[in-house]
Amino acid sequence: MVCTGPAGAQGYSAQLAVNDRQVLVAAEITTESPDFGHLEPLVRATRREVAALGLSDLGVVLADAGYWYRRQMQLIADEGIQVLVPPDAGILRGARPGWTGGMFSFMRHCR
Image 1 (spheres, rainbow, N blue to C red):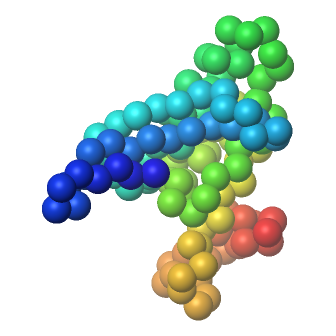
Image 2 (cartoon, one colour):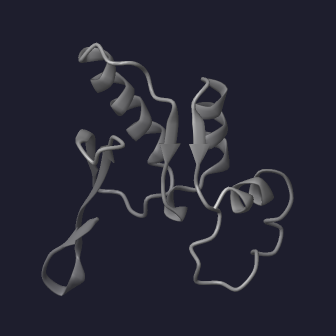
């Protein structure tokens, strides 16, 4: 979600994390847009909130294509959390040039 002011000037970008029952468990607000680069900070915030409540750690992170940032996704996966983010927003027909094989193909197969 990006909030805008007069003449479309960007205000803030809010990142929200919900659990499997759509209960809000963490939120981050920045002045940066787009969502690219916000996945890892939001996962860290979510893990802090979940730990503070004494709940079990995250098992799966699911986000839309705007959060596709291979390096952050790999860092999260390296901590034992399954990451599911589609590489394509659905606007394009077919894969972006160079976005094939490996992680790109795996995520497309998970749909």
